[in-house]
Picture 1: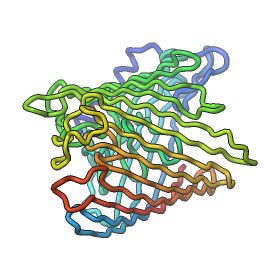
Picture 2: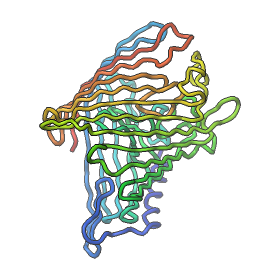
Picture 3: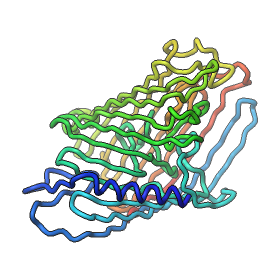
Length: 401
C-alpha cells in the first residue's frame, strides 16, 4: 500500500517538470474543473484549499431471490469526503481526497489503497481510501491533463446520474480511475476526452464485472474516448459519444477476447413554457459489437435471446421536472442491460430498473433526497423458478463544505 502511494506521489511530481505550464494573458477564457488560469506577469502565491461533503443515508432493501426465498435489510449508512487542493501556479495544482464509507451492518473497517475495485466499481461499506490523488496541468488554453487517481465520470445528465460506462461514485459508492486524462477543447463546439487507465491483475478501477479477467498483460490498460458538444444552452442539455476498449479481458472458448463498448447520450430541454424551472428528457444507448455469449456470463439464458446477435445492448431513458416548484427536482428513470453488458457501475448485467427520485434543495450547501427503485431480471434463467426482484428505498441528506 505504501509503495503504491509513493509511486503516485513520485509520478505526479515528476510530470510537473516534464510539461511547460501555460499562463494565460488577459482575461481567463475558462477553467479546468474549477481552477482558473491567471494572467502573465502577475505574481502568484501557492494557495491551499480544503473542501468536503458528508452524506448520511437510510436504506431499506427487500429482495426476492430466483429460488423464491426473500429477505429484508435496513441500515444506516454514511459517506464522508475530505479533500484538499494546492494551487502551485495558476496552471498547475495538486489535489487529493479521502473517502470513507460506513454502515450499521458492516463487518469490519479498513483503510486500503488498491489498484482495483470490486467488479461493481465500488468499495464496500467499512472502507476508507483516497479516491483522488492527482496532478493537474493547463498545458495550453485548450489542452488540459490530469495524472494520478481521479474522477472521470460520464453519466446521462440529470440529478439521477447513471451511466452505461465509466460512471461511479454514486450515492454511497467509492470509486476512481488510475491513469492519465487529457481534455482538449478541439473546436468551439466540441470537447474531446481521452483516458488511459491502469488495471490491476485482479480487476479494474472502474466497473469490470465477471467474467472479465485482467490477469493478461494486454489487459493492464483500458482506453476511453469521449466527444461532447460544448453548447448546452437552448434545446440541448447534453450530446456525447463514448468508446471504451480493453484487450484480452474476456475468457471464452479457450482464448481471451477484447471488450469494446460504444455509448451515446443525449438530453433535451423541452420547449415547455413555465413560470420557473425546466423539463428535461433524455436517453443513453450502449452497444458492445462483439460481446461474449450470454451463456458464458449467465448460464440458463440462451445466446439467441440477445437483442442483436453477437452483441450486447444497454439503454436508459429519464425525464425531469427541475425547479418547477422552487427548490424541488423530480425525476423518473427506466433502463435495461443485457446479461453480457459488463462495464456499468449503475446497472448490473441482466437487469431492468425503474426509479423515481425527489430532491429538495434546502440551501447552497445542503439538500435532502429520497428515492424508490425496483429492479428485476431482464431474462429469467431456465434454471431458476422465477426472476430475481429487488425493491429499495433511501432517504439522505448531502452537506457540502
